[in-house]
Length: 132
Image 1 (cartoon, rainbow, N blue to C red):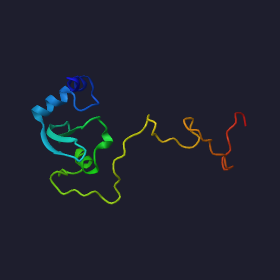
Image 2: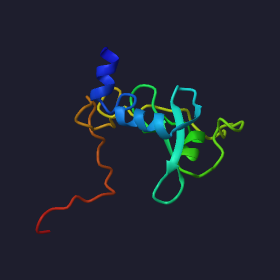
Image 3: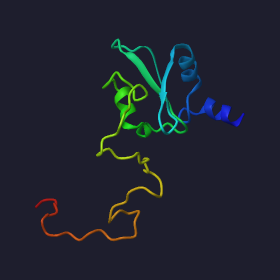
Image 4: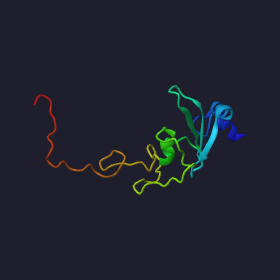
């Protein structure tokens, strides 16, 4: 019951009832990635292309889509990673969750949220003063 209520009243956790209904009526399952996100296609968008969407496993975090699936979702390729042996390039990094707003967020030296002091000015910059 708890999961049903969470999915009914939150759009950021899994799929909404409208998305589930649309998926049931028009969606064709294409594949699943390593994190459990499920990818679908079906129907047509305003440009005449096949619509593609994802139902996230857990919180809806767009950066959690792996590079191969990202290319398929944005119509950069017609072949999904489920239909081919997709190998990530050596320069592709693993997913790193967006930590903004958490204690693990990036805070540079001098930020008001850190205990460190702001770096000293090196002299290559002249501060603006009004009327000067």
